[in-house]
Image 1 (tube, one colour):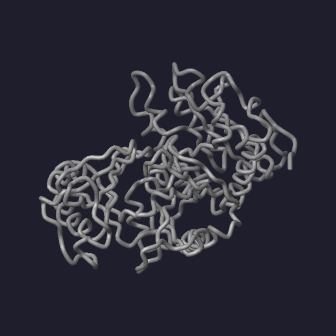
Image 2: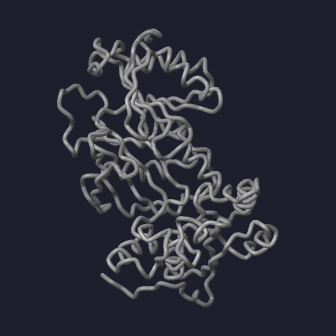
Image 3: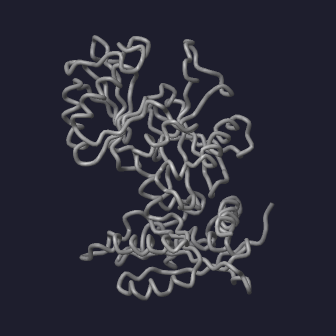
Amino acid sequence: MKTTRFNTLLPSPEGSCKKLAVVQFKVPGAKNGGTDKGPDGNRIDSIPIANGVIKAGGACDMLLYDYEDHAGFEATIEKYDALIVRINPGQLSQIPGVDGVQAKFDATMNAFVAKGKPVWSSPGVQTKMGAKDALCKIANMGCGLVDTFAYYDEETLKTEFKKTMAFQPRVIKQNRGSAGEGIWLCWIANEAKDGIIGAHEYPSKTFGEKSLGDDVVLKLMEMNDNHVEYHTVGEFLTFCGGVAAGGQLVDQRLLGRIDEGEVRVLMAGDTCQMIIHKKPEGGGLSAVGGNSAYTYYEPTDPLYADLLAKLQGDIKNGLLDVLDLKGEKLPLIWTCDYIPKNPEGWDKAENAEPMQTEYVVGEFNCSCVGISMFQAVCGGEKTLADVPDADYFEACKLTDLMGVKALEMLA
């Protein structure tokens, strides 16, 4: 149902016991201050987010971070109970001729959190939830996959990958990137070296039973563009070894049903606002970028009841603690990208029916997650007022929920 539309910041209610601020940043020299903004310099979704807080009964201001007056910014934020940071990853590092701004800003946000005041999302949450090795930490939770490993050195990679690859097809993920770059799908190639063997033909029937030799040929597909390469195990490990030594790699089972698409759960705090099924198009396996068809579901849809129940259980059972984020708040807006799978021990040729299908998390996203119906008018001459009514009111369901959840988490 439509309500009154607000294209500008509402006045904060008098006497509110909680005061928040939406923090933004304009990249010097960039049109509008960045491609996520309109000509007024605001992210298109920032005013609706602030208004969501105000509608829920909190006070909310709009703050623009000035890196040339960092001390003034630190003094200003002292009067707020929480900060909602709407700065795209990387923008604080785009200032011509100036380095270290991101680190300085992050240090201030961490100091704010240390005082018991939430930052959505804090540097720690962005780093630890967004890291690929988060999948290893949640391996034994309802949303995880038990045979998920992280490699921090070349020797462990060489030893363990030969075991995992002998057991099931794999996904190898570098601990960076969000558009599929550095993410490789790995299969054992067939004898003709032009395809793959069936999952039932893998040497190990139980994990760790056997290891592959260096000369076994693999079929490899990179997820950013779905291109295919063929290399031996030895060649692939040489390629990956430097990455493991310089950071980390995550090794996870490749779920054969990934070609059915991913299920994105859009969360505000501990509450699901929407579920989106992303089906890859064009014959590829990647559901990133513009390669997908989208279908939207309400959180109450029985198709995903088990998925949501497990996620809620994981949150209650210490999801943030497992991710080394004890004492932090859940992100105010975040997503979980799930991949479908057959139940463990499934021994039938056909896949499980939809209501039997299980799901595991492939990635958490919590770094300034965008709101697509507002983002459609970003980067040019259009403003919030140019968002069509239908899109505006639909997107405000999320921003209004964010306001409610922000005040709940501050209570």
